[in-house]
Image (tube, rainbow, N blue to C red; front, side, top):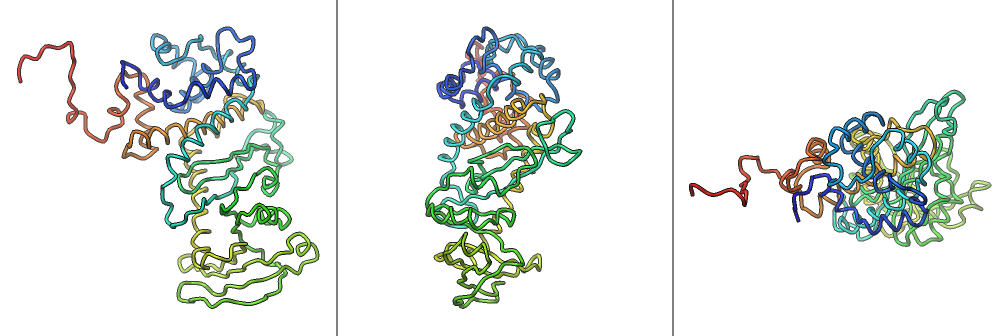
Length: 388
């Protein structure tokens, strides 16, 4: 309900304050804090994400220019560049990671009935990573190359809503396949990944968890065909085989049967060989499911373009992870806002509108409405009506 709140305050109302307080209490985030709380830190950093601020000095200048509106926006502490830098350096990044997971759970519930192009009752995830280059002298913990630093965002994306269910931030030197050790696999779910995650011991753990995987085979895969199923070659399918691994180590790491599907993409004219432990879905559905993996690539491209995660406000590992998780929380919060208010606009358009209306006192639904301003009826209850 609009009670003269700023747009920024109305947006933040979709972030449950009681859940945030639980996350802060879990890691004692406000212990011995007198003036600039974790809530203030979150709101300032979310403001920076929504308005594309370039630096801490930029954040300070913009917020101080609207000092009279900060209290009603929920920011109680005095905004200072040094104070915000100290908060990012010292306050546990897990506060914001846990709060982002709360928002992710809400968003996934709201988008549970969305379609991603293939009708399946199972949950489908795409697993991949993106690398963000850093200066090794400024970020010495972010090891990658001999003279180059980087961090990786390992992301497990729920394809129904393009909502990241798991995000793990690591130095760039951590190989993608190691992230499989950090995941808890959901029984019945399907995990789609590229050849970088091809480790048969780890893939067998997915099978033991009653989950399914779809990945691509390497050229030197050693296997023995047990039998083949007939396929319609006009669809691009070339074979659908049940195989066992015969490699010296691979047969010990994955003793069960696998399904090998060879497919020629009619658009790219490229031959692809898939491996999966799912024997119930059709071969063409498996091929179509793997094609949806590109959604995680689009997600990476989108957040790099529209969120502040390529340049960081601090150089410590804690500051970087804090910024990344608040950026993800902001992205998910806008997705929740879009769904709950039934806004027929893209997330990009919503972010662009919010970036210039955050401190206006107007109903957020009106600010984001697709109607033109002259089509919206404005009525001031204190204004007398002279003409009907």
